[in-house]
Length: 369
Image: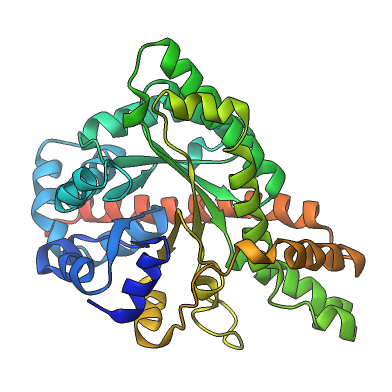
């Protein structure tokens, strides 16, 4: 067990790996990371599966079998990805049970092509949940306007959800409202609330990338001094929202009925600007009950040299407010940036999804698989 990742876990952070492939499963790599890096969950997305399936070798036999059955491209993608997610869920099953569902979770995302289709998202969420067939799966749904409706419906059906692509504090409050609405409806339907879990994935580095670009264009010393600060400030204020919203009378009523809090999850934690410390979206966002889902290079950097200093969020709300106010003050619109990032987030996943479709179509059409 690594001392630094162990310290992070002790401080209340659940470390999830932002990657999954059949290679990781079959070589024992994921099992090794569970033992040596305190990894207690996995997240996936279309980009991750596009990369995994493009290598192809470990999927060849399944692809050949699906080809013989005349499976469509979409059917093949669903079969391959849900099989990997089910295997990962099985690997984490003991941890899932020992933590009462708090950890040991594996996420799979609905098609990004459905991001603005409420009913289509709900239907696919239910199908993926049934197809994986494991209690510890989380269905990822983006926090678009239509996604919010789908989140409430999916939670109401007793299905655990990872809400993805959250960038703004306003949107985050809407996400929590959708979760609580779903829980209220589930309770009315007699569903055991203790079995329903959710995380809210707040994207961090992408906020810095877009705001830093605008600060550079402004070109003043005041603007330059704010670079690399907005992403962390935004996430810290999201944690304040989390604490406020789950202390409300509405939330407390549901918690008393057995419901779980929807934990904040820090996503997009790989540093995109090499000028910044490679673990800053880890060490600066430590608090109890949060999840940090890391690409492997960030996980390894954390294990190698991260300085874990305990809670680095709770005492920083005033400073975080000041940072975002200062960003607005130099002429960068927070609302404009976060709305842009949500649109771009969906578009990027659509591109990855189309790459995944092209890869699988090529494999199905290949005589050699």
